[in-house]
Image (cartoon, rainbow, N blue to C red; front, side, top):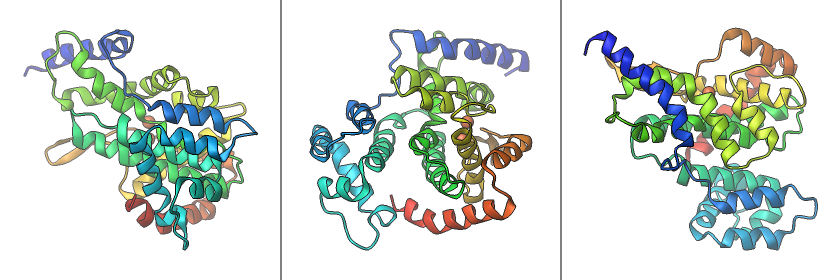
Length: 291
Ligand SMILES: [Fe+2]
Ligand SMILES: [Fe+2]
């Protein structure tokens, strides 16, 4: 195909992709209502164990995934967890909320039928970013209530955009190779639109929606933790990559070196501390791989 034509199609896609989010026919990736309800309950100080269990039992498939996750070595430790109630009692409401989100996006949001291998890479990258964010927060002493969820959802825009492609009028399933640079460029904005549409807390919208930008304000350290974790995924071969061209996957989701240095400085982490994060992540990742 001549380059000018490729450029024209790409430009049309670029302008149309985001407007698709406003098209009533477009069905954005769905976050199960149970996940949103649990988010609400977890914010309350008087959150009650039975209330959480009852909420989870409304969605048996999700409950099954949550039980499988909390039974993995990363959560269960030596003593197995055999029931949802035991899980909530042992891990606490907020960790359970994080696990529910992990199960919910793995089951629903990243189940896009198009471009499956690229979506699988984004899903893996998101999970690994979330777990490394948790480690970074511990090392930087950040009380990071919503950090795991920010890590988990930061690149959800890739899924939203790839799902949107088939709704772009006049386009017939374009090759992802043509599309990729635009999807990559727009994914941050798409992540913002999705988490806003889901009605997630303002802090999550702030971090997820601007995860390739430097932050000031109360969420600056959480944003820095997500950015550092996002970058560290590459050491575990879990970066976001596009389709293969001549046997190599196209790069994506890149973070400039300057941003990384700024993030590490914001967190007060020197090279040795970052190395510790990597060592801990290395220890934990085999368990994540079992999830
Ligand atoms: Fe990322
Ligand atoms: Fe990103």
